[in-house]
Amino acid sequence: MNIRCFQRNFSAALPPLVPLQLPSPMETHLWYILPDEVKSWGLLNQYSELLSPCESESVNRMRGDQLKKRALLARALVRTTIARYQTNCQMNPRCLKFRKNLYGKPEVEWRNEDNFSPLPLHFNLSHTSTMIACGVTVNVPIGIDIEEKQRRTKNNLIAFAQRYFSAYEVKVLTAISDPEVQRQEEATLRNFHPPGSSVSEASDIIVESSDDPRNPTNNWQFTLLEVAGSHYGAICIEKDITAGANAPMKLTVWKTIPFVEDVCVSGTDAVVDLGRIIEQ
Image (cartoon, rainbow, N blue to C red):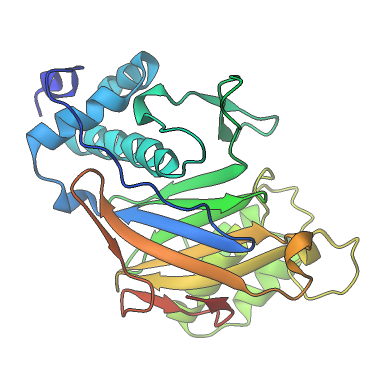
């Protein structure tokens, strides 16, 4: 891939994004793109126009055409997804700025202007070599994780779990005999660590049901999906007290190629709720 393809070029005007209503309380919007379906050099050039100079430099430092392409698509997906959600003015995806919070998680640095009210959006990004996904919520943090169904870990899954998960989590995985079900559960457990925390050897998060409000996992809702027939997606959002204690998790999913097509795939075979706790 010629690196010049990722240089900034403002000669072509980008079409406007279709405005979208903010997610409702306890609703997650999930947008995903399949990198193999983006084949237009012209479109990639347009995506490169959205990036900040630092982002462009980061993309061009990567080795390998596919790594550069996926990095570019991930940044374009985040910018175009957030720019869809508008309140009292139109948002240009080029103008978005990001910062890291106390936990090192990226968040939007909203501009401070009299005619603009910052959106209470939270987002999280996950990707594999064959899918990039961005999850969006309002008022509450979100964490997502995307994995290929056919992924094969280099090391034994239990050995991986023993290194990064709690003793209880390892016990849960070990008790599962079906390798495919075990992998699904591993993806859910990994996402069970709430956004802002990290999966580490010192993890004290225990995955078990509890009505004790002091239990950190009691404040979160989790579900596992099958997406596009080829990937698992785990979603974790903090419970919104304004929506009621037992409010179900809602989910709307779009397959997208930004500026080309957006297809709502909720309620189709492209989205299968393996956790059976969401509304589509």
